[in-house]
Image 1 (cartoon, rainbow, N blue to C red):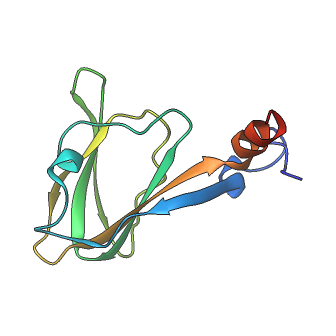
Image 2: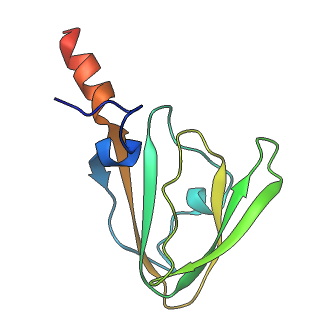
Length: 114
């Protein structure tokens, strides 16, 4: 049975449902370099395996609200559902991988209605 979100850390209840291939400087999709967000209920986690990147949180109108440098020792936090963001730049040796997760409660809610 899933843990109640109000009582425990909600990050512990996330289930990864998709992991994309490893990206390098020339294979990071252009869409991820532009303003975008995740689907409702979907959390994203970018894992940097080598190199560094500049990651920006954006307002809905595309203005930069925060800019951060991340690398192997300083990994990005999880990206909340519908948070506008983009990869602003990467080092030449970047190696990173993106995964998507959902809350277990959303899965159990869907299963209980079917």
